[in-house]
Length: 188
Length: 235
Image 1 (tube, one colour):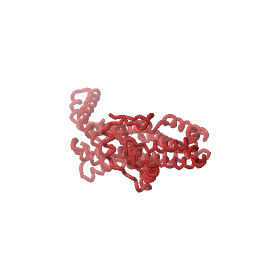
Image 2 (cartoon, rainbow over the protein chains, first blue to last red):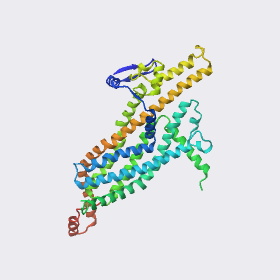
Image 3 (cartoon, rainbow over the protein chains, first blue to last red):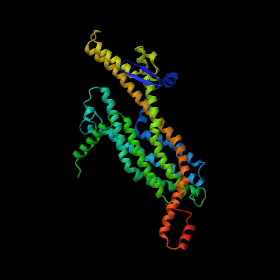
Image 4 (cartoon, rainbow over the protein chains, first blue to last red):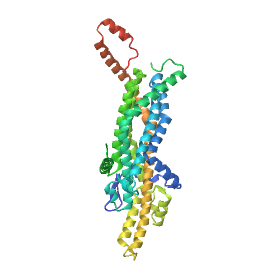
């Protein structure tokens, strides 16, 4: 371990192998700022973030379940179809709920609008004199508010929408798979 | 009937509660919300598996631990993968290892570009030091208050650009961590765990089912008949 001193007041501790490794990495300058901002802003919004994770999951999870060598073929097939149905349903519902909460919070927590539109901004943020701090706090607050609102809604939709729809879609996929493979039944 | 003022007050109270509770950063918020979301989703999906009569006992015995492991993995990945990646991305932006064109020009203008990419270098602190220096010494340098305000605002603009850059890189790192976990790490671990617990669960279901049958049957003949037809046990 070594001690890194930036100034007298600020002393931080860091491991030497980590700092050595870090300094060996090449410096990278972002040339296309517009594209970088566009990607970053999309990923920072909860609904598009959910969509990206859903797409990543659908690209690998059903295949990994289907080719699982540790279980029999029927179980692997049923697990794979259930995973596929679950990802489709949960991503669609999650995208709609998060997107709705995000848009609603942005609409009602806009500091430029007067009257009812600023009801979601606490006084502590409105009274902040430093503009940079104010915009940072507002951004954090909007994110926290939309995420927590979405989670509150999802506590209900997980049971009333996600689970039943996953079951229905899985059963539909299983029946389609069975008829396509001309097998009497998937289950053992 | 609910009055509009009642809804307004409720929304304001909720907003104030969120602000007070998560004021000191999003780390706590991400942790709690992920735990609640994954917890409820796992319970709902586990119930859906158990109540779906299209699955056989062996399939349910595999899918239930698979679902439970996935929920646990989602929470653990926050600490094991997402947090370190976020920390690394913050270090990349603060040190200037990953930098935007505007910030690079600014550092070159203030003779700080030679520190770019060094482990101990902190762009945010350097900009704040410059602002503090102007605020403290503008009178000694014969700069008027209005002019110093203008100069300070231009530095603050750069600071704002740095925060945006830091937020974006943090969002990309967190998403990369989630994608890595969801698409590659979690499926293998949950399948390993589910395969390990499948035989244990099959025995458990059979024991429960046998106990139920023993309670229901009166004669040995009935018991044998039911036991013989019991190859497709359902929970």
